[in-house]
Image (cartoon, rainbow, N blue to C red; front, side):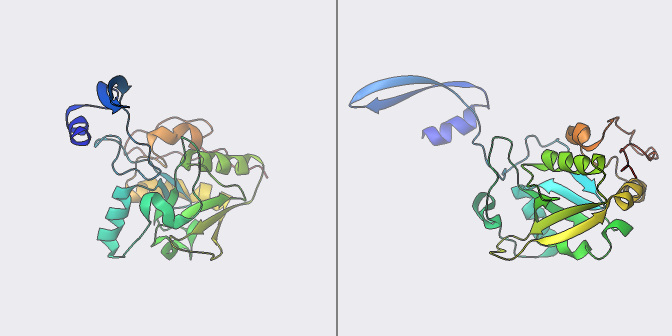
Length: 226
């Protein structure tokens, strides 16, 4: 009964007094309720939250959620199986901020020519220029470091769920093509920004939110030095 009562009558952060029998004696404990931490959340934090996303070379990257898997299943009729809490992707990132970052869809551009169909099964991003991202924010930090260090390309490695021992698929994007083309995608697809508000500081060197439907100005990213 406790398992039914608490979710229906209490909220995250509420206090609750729980009585248990221990060695035949009644013992009461005061608890502070908190949600179970899941690597793949079942629901968004709030129904009115803007989904967390980032667009890189037209690749739409998002943290894996159960609602995202359901949406892709409905739209594509694919029988996606990511396993319990994302187990089908293999090694799981660790830490309180860990996420499984997936390639959710593609906005066609010159930067991703020939790669668009690879996102059908929600492949997981496992490396950015050789480094494994802990979450989407960390992946964007790695990309920003590549630009600052003068790299010519983003070397993104992806694996499909249930990929087993198959080698990751490499998606190599020219950094200058990415920087030149992504802002054009905003106007073409009526998208307010290249990332969700919670990632602005990780995505841009000098974050400044764009007005909705305003024509974006190029140069918000610091371009790679030649």
